[in-house]
Amino acid sequence: MAIHRREFFGAALSAGLLTAARGDAQGWGDPATPAAGDPDAPPFPARERLALWPGPPPGSPARAPVLAPTMNGPKGARELWLRGIAVPEVHVYRPARPNGASLLALPGGGYQFVSFQNEGLDVAQRFNALGTTVFVLAYRLPGEGWARPHSVPLQDAQRAMRLIRARAGDLRIDSARLGVVGFSAGGHLAADLAVAHDERVYDPVDAADRLSARPAFAGLVYPVTDLRIGTAATMLSGGGAAPPAAIVEARSPVRRITPAIMTSFLVHALDDPVVPLEHSLGWIAACRAAGGKVEAHLLQEGGHGFGLHLPPVLPGARWPELFAAWIARAAPQPGA
Image 1 (cartoon, rainbow, N blue to C red):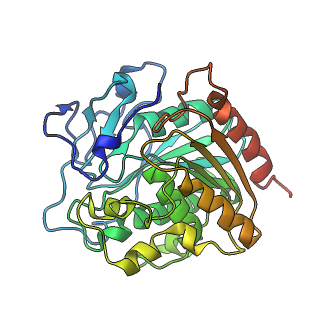
Image 2 (tube, rainbow, N blue to C red; image 1 turned 30 degrees about the horizontal axis):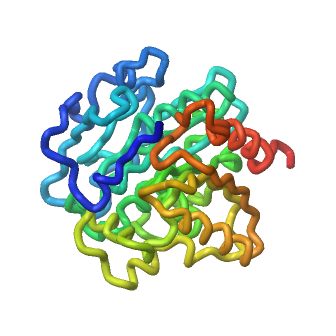
Image 3 (tube, rainbow, N blue to C red; image 1 turned 135 degrees about the horizontal axis):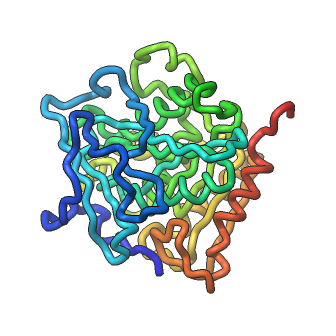
């Protein structure tokens, strides 16, 4: 059934996690290692990776975090979590027959960890099979000592979009058909990128930063869209006290939707015990009020953290196929 991660929101991960790997000089292990022991899954780390920043990331602390991939949780092989990401990277997963469309996948984890398998590698595997190139972002977490922690995930997401577009030819993608899909806290990051893609949250570092960070479309799966709901704002402090009200407002994407918002696709279960349905309902209402296009699939059951793995008996298990069909309509076609 669904992966329940509520105990990790607003609190640090327990110290008893089983360490699966330590990193090499770049913060990762053997690039040919299969993901989470699944021989059919994309490898972790990817054989092809793009470091986001040519030097230290913005706001680097004096002592950088140490990568700590961990394996834990009820689904075992579906639970590859990353923390301590000192060198944020885009992991590239290419399909055998690319159709030009691509996704920047933003896994969740409450900004306490990055759920890289369930909401990253599995996304790559599923959508590669459909011809879509998938870029999974290992982004920095706010509570690990970075300056301006509330902007750290958005810095990495903006930079990833620009870097991918700068290398679109080599990556065999159409930069105009590059979208984003995010889950839970990654859904917050995807929504934040959708409304704040042109907000200056870091100083430009090279020519890639002259390119747009705007996604062509946005997929939001059980997303956090309003930090004013409950204790959601504590995500931006790594589970500590909520940031000042001005930051909560600025980093609540639903508050910043304008008629320029790109088309979006939402999936949310009504019985989600972690991220209330109101986050998606608020996004839908704000998009409609602004004249934006939105497609939404509200599931009777599914809980939270299900990724692409709802039981087949549930109608909501078809959402990845619906999303793929929606992308074919939402992403600008060649010559359109």
